[in-house]
Image (cartoon, rainbow, N blue to C red; front, top):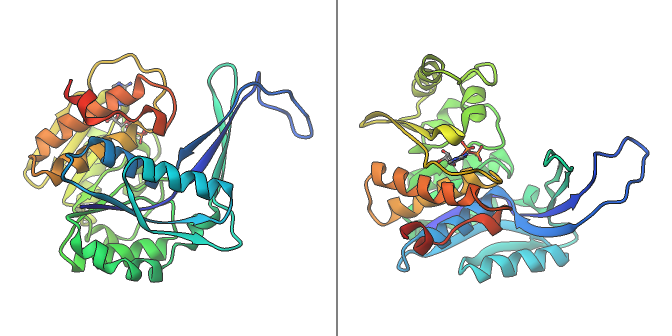
Length: 304
Ligand code: ADP
């Protein structure tokens, strides 16, 4: 079993001719509600990409509103165990309000809502579930004290802990030392290593970031580099894996798909190199499609 601990949001996507000025009212175009949040996206990616024998469960919080109902049913429709997805009374579900202009540029406002209610008590209540799992996956869209508590519990239970340190922030080294696989993108890796943003555009900068993160206790690092693929600094050695060549249409959820694919492959005992190759094939399919959860491919599509 794979357990994902993280955020669930409803993405409220409104297409506009251009971004409105303060105080201005604009007429928008198409409006869509799309299930999202990094935790939910990664859970969906794990569910769609893992073997039939591997179960996927989430530990998370939803609000007691219509979005909460819709988000729960989206998880269930992908076969995800929602026993430990709690509904928080009197609180709104997490939302991401997204404006997309005619050039495809977007502006996003996040309201964490119920995601902020995920507490160490919720983690403790799911201890049996975590004990039954092989791999525990986390991101940074829920409160840090809860993430700390969950990583420590998973580590103490002897589980493989995968952390996607997104959205970017710095983290204490004692926490990173309990993580088996740290999977940042370039911006997150630079932030964690204390380097200026966009400084990972050459091999020397990547090496410097890896050296810093290694010194901080991260044994296995997978830095995703967008169209440039993945740089894997593993305890078994460092390798650059080129991305699958595709025409990118929308890179939303590329990272989430990569993580889901990597974890799904690890859960069935594949090697790290095989898992990275499988995850990159899945991520490449996702960038050739529009949306977040709508773009995450199924296992049979990746195999084909
Ligand atoms: P994030 O979405 O978290 O910023 P990245 O942009 O680094 O993550 O993308 C994650 C992975 O998705 C990459 O390592 C790569 O495998 C795949 N990917 C992303 N963009 C492209 C692209 N343009 N072409 C092919 N693969 C891509």
